[in-house]
Image (cartoon, rainbow, N blue to C red):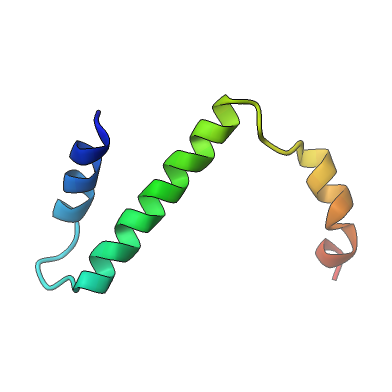
Length: 61
């Protein structure tokens, strides 16, 4: 599915009273998710254990 079709579909799923800000938020969210998935496909992800170690103190609170 093209980016344009994904954007249109995402906007169509919003309620009829959605504001321009709602539309912008939805597009930004979808774009961010797609970027993250693309980066994972490119091997740019962070290993779960590395995240646990880096946030060890924060997660134990």
